[in-house]
Image (cartoon, rainbow, N blue to C red):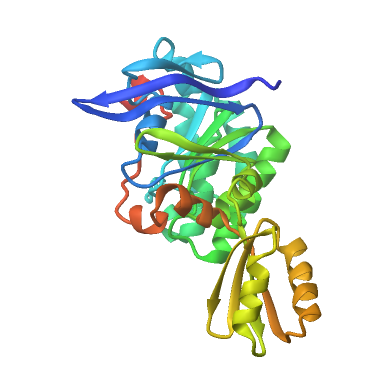
Length: 334
């Protein structure tokens, strides 16, 4: 088994009578891209604040990069990079200066700082703009700079709080490709929070969904989708005999549920690619004409709503960044 980059055991946090996090146990392997999803108030922010040493657990334990978050917080902070949701690079400095001053916070030697800064600027595609004021940058450029800055001290675990929030689709894709490159080339472990379900499906090898302080679902995106019965929908538009068609498909053992919507039938099956041909063959034998077929594959957003009953985008609309102040050595970061 791979070494754990992040591990919690029965970790909990109480504020007064409220258990914000209730005995959560998770493990993130070294080199894994791990996604963390949850509605506002679910406990996600509190858990990550404990992992980044901003909150002390009420009970349970947690380690990051092998360091205990309570007993060895300074070592945890030096082992992690943190990119908060809000763009945080200094507008009055250049990109090169932003990264350099962050390297000073971590006592990176001058030559190593200079060489690492140049390499990071190249990695995130900002070399040509390295000596321009950040005030002239687009949102996507600033986000790439924030990520580069968080990597100046070569952390082993990178925490990203909604890194593409507010970016246009093209900039979002650029950031995704950059993060995938970092994973492949540096073996970096990334712990991501996001409200873009496509982002989680594209980037994350595993995803945890937290609600009411507890992890309620954990697995790969495909595993989470397969765990829901009737997770694919086959839509059939039939040319007459709708009631006969509905009665026939409802009798099939692989159809979890079926409903009529005008001339269309919605058939819920575990595998749409396998179920659709079987349904077409069935209706053909009955002499019922099928005019159109559509397969809807379950998405990670469907999984989220199934488990929480809420739309994550609505819940997160007033979210405040949860990682401000994390990932900076205590003597520099307060």
